[in-house]
Length: 263
Image (cartoon, rainbow, N blue to C red):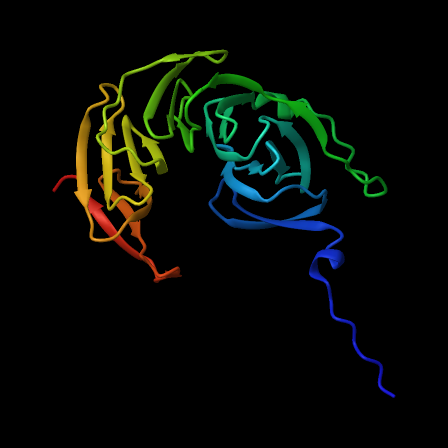
């Protein structure tokens, strides 16, 4: 008699996680690096990279941000940033900034990663170290769904139902310009580039651009369906806008358009 093949249980069979990292080197050549076996962690909600492309940061459902080192090819450290889901993270200057469903904003100094001593001997299984971040602020009413620091890290923009701008001195934050927006749904996507704040909101068929220095609205565009993702192009004149329609619990294919800010 032929033996019946046992059905594979993907969860039980998944003993170790592995990570493939694709980065650009200094000569803009695509390099693929294989990461050593990693420890298990919660589902990833957000992802960002360091400015030099060496570190990859992944915020999970447990409140931690996990860091991969692309040069060493291993899961370097677990940063305990929050007590709930890490909803968004971003790098600005020498700092990693994150926000969470626990309604807090936290920071971590990136130079601390360079001081971690790693045993790269293949005979030893590297176990990621655990370190803690620092809480910067807390909103008692709503969580910040999105966060994005400026490139120099001196200003942080966080979005919940309101757009909040903070001045950051490397240790603490202070209130920045007040941004007035008549829309009230929570912010789905937020980008900051060259003194401009680009946002779209959940269940809202609009995208807007605000002046970071004054908080005033600069540009606005209307669509027939809800906007779900937005991002600046490198020329800073155009914005990529992604819209998507839900009909009776079914998702239609997304559409993408280019928005010219100078028209």
